[in-house]
Amino acid sequence: TICGFASDSRHDVQYYRFKPFHYSFNDEVKGRLAGIKGGLSMRMGTAIRHAGIDLLTQSSRKKILLVLTDGEPADIDVDDPQHLRLDAKKAVEEFLKNGGKITQCEPFARTEDIQIKGGFYGRKPKKKEE
Image (cartoon, rainbow, N blue to C red; front, side, top):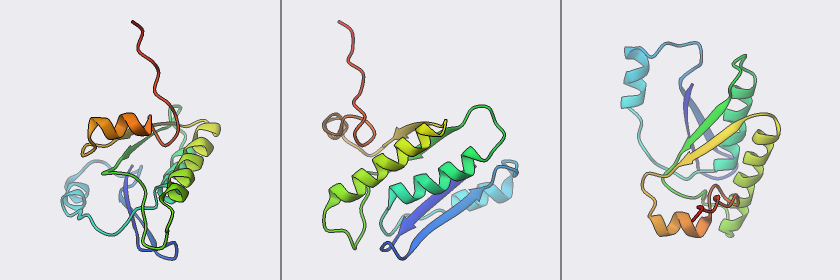
C-alpha cells in the first residue's frame, strides 16, 4: 500500500491511502501519486500507527513499513519538538513489538543531521567494523 499524511494540529491529522493493498499499480493509482502535494505539518507517530495497523492486519508473512520523510515530526500545536520525536519513537517500538519491520528514508536530510539523530528517533546505528 502507499499512503501519505499531514497534520494541522492533533485535532486534524489527515491520512491518505493512494494505493490500498488490494489495488494493482494501475493508471488510477499513478494519477493519485502524481497529484501528491506537500503541505502542513507531520505527526509521524500517528501516521506510523495508522500504517502499522493496516500492515499488521495483512496476511503477508513479511511486514515492512518504509517511512519516506523530509524531516523530523513537527506540528503547529506542539512547543517542544522532543514530544513528537518521542511519540514517533514509541510508535516505531510498538510496530516492531507486534512483528513489523521498519526503515526510514530521508532524501532531503543532510548527512550530519542523520548522524546527530542516530537512526530512527532513538535507535542508534550499528558501528562499522574496522
